[in-house]
Length: 309
Image (cartoon, rainbow, N blue to C red; front, side):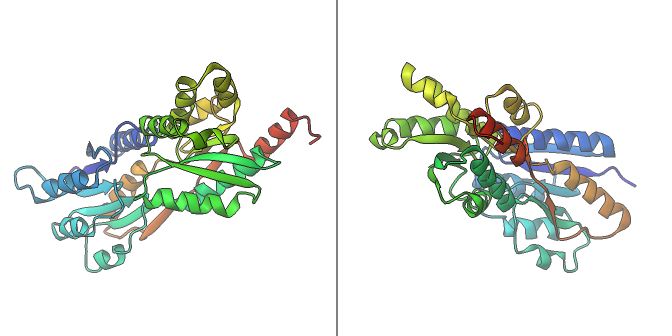
């Protein structure tokens, strides 16, 4: 059996989760004894589409056995998917629910499926964290992902489902990077309205944006304001051991949501499908969890406020 060759297309290389996605792919390649090429789209859907089409349509180099990709924009690239499967290339969509997979799987021998984080559940966990950290209610400054990102929208939907009614949200937009959040918060601080709301908690839809917000408050505020902003609880999402979880342990974040990387899992499922001649399930969900647990957060908050637990 020939050695399998994978192309992994990720959204960016300056986001903690995307870096972990790349590491997961490399680990899987070593474990499975397959070849992998990893490319990044710089958070641009057009760039990503062009990169993928170039690989699919190239006649010079050997085509990959499967493309594993996380969409950079609001579309799952149905036309690119059809081009790939027509060329006999497997197609795996990460962290996005798309409606064209059942159609592609009809009569297609190459593996076609999706693996996604349950983004609404991630948002629900964040809403429960807000309840634990703000037992008396308050205002949350919430840095959301890009407007065109279904993952960002689903996380917000889940958060609104579980946050208490006495917790209100002021939303800013980021692009899944520390720099984008830093810029969004810095711009917000220049508005008069930023001084009219008493913020009680700062949250990002990923850890890098939470840290970008923290950096903005550290560098763009006066000494007296800075002390209050940096004393607030900050929460994020992704929860990688070397970043999000480490930031929680050091006190820079109050909590995060652990979201398992799934590129390695995708490659394992493709390899298994090729060896057995079967199709994996159309869709597989990974399971997020709060770090620390919501119960631990609630106990810690009540103790810090002198409330009997």
